[in-house]
Amino acid sequence: MLLSVKDLCVKYVTFEGIVHAVNGVSFDIPERGTLGLVGESGAGKTTTALSLMRLIPVPPGIVERGKISFEGRDLDALSGEEMKKIRGNRISMIFQDPMTSLNPVLTVGLQIAETIAAHQNMSEREAMKKAREMLEKVQIPAARYKEYPHEFSGGMRQRVGIAMALACNPRMIIADEPTTALDVTIQAQVIELMRDLRDEFSTAMMLITHDLGVVGEVCDRVAVMYAGEIVEEGSLEQIFEHARHPYTNGLFRCIPDIDEDNSRIQPISGLMPDPCDLPAGCCFHPRCPECMEICRTRKPAPFTENGQMVRCCLYTRGGAGQ
Ligand code: SF4
Image (cartoon, rainbow, N blue to C red; front, side, top):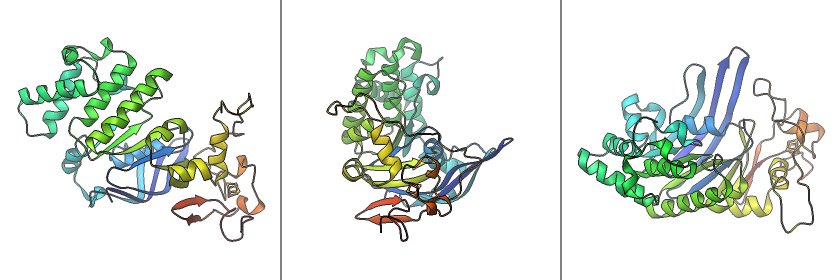
């Protein structure tokens, strides 16, 4: 297994209280696998990704427990220097807004070349040549090498971000809402580009998004996060054709369907719970249309069948689904 995360728990200690951001998350990503991590804002998706890169700010963040192994190595046991060699080289990240991740006072070519020079045993000239090649790979003319981020459109900047992420041929890319800041037509182009380059570079990917449409285009497995937990996980087909968790089904009901004679989408009622004060029992119970008495007090245990995991009392012993 390329990446294995076991029982990851991350919290933030703030003046308002302890934010329970990630509460016992486990998942695996094999070589060349693509996992979509889906959920509303505040579900803990980005904190999970930052934990993998060991980028949780301490304080206020605390990685309470959990084991992350990548290429067979326990990331927690690595020194800061060893981790630097992995970050941007073996695992790299594409951020939501490239304008904030790119340096505004350096040309895009120089920024890509710096990433390459930091990790690969190359001369400056070779790194610059590779940076030009990477720009061409993401369909930006190499002649724009000397331009600054503000001279590019939003979609082009995200392409630069993708070129930087792939420049060292990483084994895994974490893409955190890579298309959210783009308009719809550019989103489609960027998704297609990411998919093509992932296949060309044989890179595994963790795609963080709240957009199930994007997941359907790119991923082969899907994990649905709610209030810091993975509440359902399965193959793309299992989640899209046979979703079990009421939250997953609620997310699908929020997507407009042009084949349905239904002009209104059905949003999930209520809001994500306060992570400083999570409800007892199933965290989704205040919003769940299928809530039972037991859900208010008992935390649902994971139930796995044919590789599809769900955390819901409907499917565990004693629930109505039995
Ligand atoms: Fe709904 Fe109960 Fe299942 Fe939670 S455990 S999702 S409240 S049915």
